[in-house]
Length: 285
Image (tube, rainbow, N blue to C red):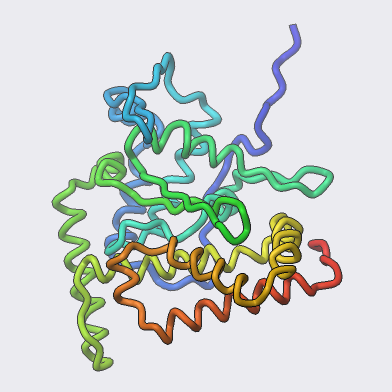
């Protein structure tokens, strides 16, 4: 009988932090050390908790533990999420693609197409239904596609590595206090938890928007931009305004000045105009 061939590209993935990155807060370093001590893929929580549909809350039938390849993926993606975790906002400040790349879970075919399926399925089919993380994705009305998911870590995620909700909350308070001390030193107003979450979310959305330079999306964006710029400038700007308004809640919009909002509209307008006028696309090297 023939031995079954491995159906994953990297049977021993390893998380490699980005080079030249900033020093991590003490709590993050502590959490990373905890993750080294515990086999998160075989945690008791994985057997006690039930998979639930994130949208409906209904139980998803499950008949076996994680297979070894998915378990290996979980063992590396957990420390990657911790490394990129923003303590005050609960956000993982990295996309699924970035996590997959840093963990050796992405592959590139001979034709040059990248696949992050191994990481994305672990997240959507296990970690989110188990309640370890929450994911949000927004429809990009300008480009006609979804933005990369925004990932948030829940207290249950930290229970995986033996960190209690109380210890997590204490770390949040300490980190916000440190952040506000720095702001006061610069003559700025201190932030509440909700303010800090808003600031972090803005940074995350801006980071996601930077991913627009990804070659795999450029052709689709270019087609849309060409179609859009057949309209009058007034109509184009109106569509951009509707898109930007949809990104924020009413309370968040109230905190953005008219001048800043106009600036965002102009940035979006000129970005799309340049894309529409670009004569050709240069493939990745």
